[in-house]
Length: 78
Image 1 (cartoon, rainbow, N blue to C red):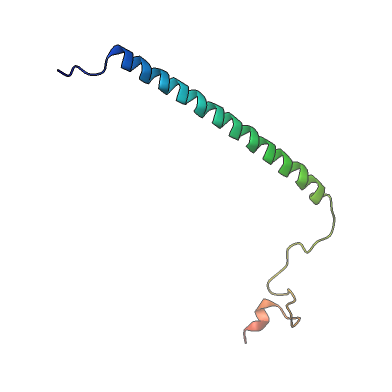
Image 2: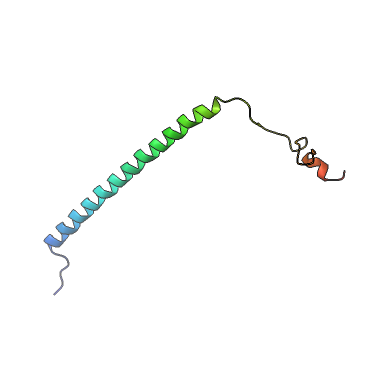
């Protein structure tokens, strides 16, 4: 006769679920800490780069010099 799982089996399953949930929570918290550290490192690294002056900046496709010293628009006969 089959009457379903016993109380002991139900309790064991509930305990296993609770333990798995604790392990999952610990992994999520660990990942959050690592992500926070990575973001902090990236932001502190960006501060050093942004303080530098110079660089190419934004260039126009129409007037940017290429290998032949001509811009993008000069590739087409107009």
